[in-house]
Length: 217
Image (cartoon, rainbow, N blue to C red):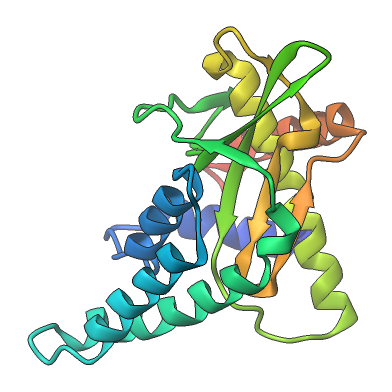
């Protein structure tokens, strides 16, 4: 969404021509953060236990080098999560459905796997939103890079809202104010914007571009 025209063509080509499945960095800690947030207690002791777990894995010579490096990097993620707790204090989180169907947007199947659901009660009604985790560390600390991450987070939060609206809310009411991208290593939260409808149209138009260029990029 935030790449230039040439960059978009390159991304389409790379996705279309990909032939191998790569192991995802941070997959284990992503699941553990989900469990931590959904735990009603959510105490510092639980987070300390996770840090001890990954410290042990990072030094376990029985594991391969990739797994040890993943554990070491996951320690940075957990340290950032501890520092950003004040940004999400009081939030109530639930595990999302195991099976989450892709969104069909502009002729493209878009996989949006919510990491957790966020719920709140307001005016006697229960509302629900979706949360996506972003765990990668920022490559640079420039103002331009920060602005780009904010834009990406805004689009991600909008996709989270669209996924909740697609049939995951049940008896709850979807609300954009509790849909977000948790940019954990930057210790930031990007909430879905008030103009989420315009953002959703932008996403769908980008998908139309992808569908049109898929064979010729």
